[in-house]
Image 1 (cartoon, rainbow, N blue to C red):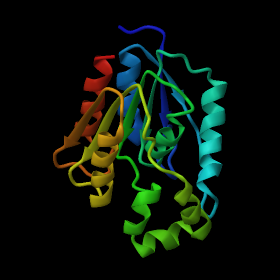
Image 2 (cartoon, rainbow, N blue to C red):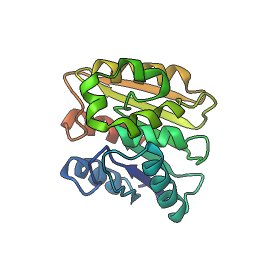
Image 3 (cartoon, rainbow, N blue to C red):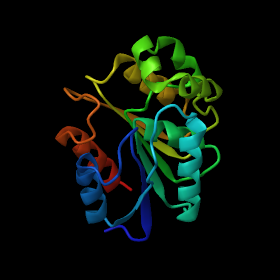
Length: 193
């Protein structure tokens, strides 16, 4: 059993690490000896992305991450850990269903999605690019039934990551962290750490 390693978890938009879709991942990580550090974010519409990134950064700093710690993000949580990757060094990053809202993705976002999030939020995204000089180990996970631009973003991010990396496309799975196959893939990765 692994000792003294922490797994920081940043949830997707509108979610909490307390949600049932995170329970299998948390259970498996604890069983493997990880201490779970949930990063709770106050999600809301019509605010800039920096509002969420700042919350995550403050909570990560408050938990005093060590060089042997790992971080997992789902959807917008994965987006946030990507943005913070150059500032907050972790031994490894687990990107689950990385949201396709980086500067070079925005032209592909459907209008109804842009309307849902609002102009303030959507305009704020244009300042964020996936980090090009990222290091540390990284695992990119996405379901083959996820949003096409999310699948494309995951492959693009994988190619851009400079450190050691793996990509896993899970068959017959969508944007579903709670899916048994998704949770099993994460457990397989955590076992190696």
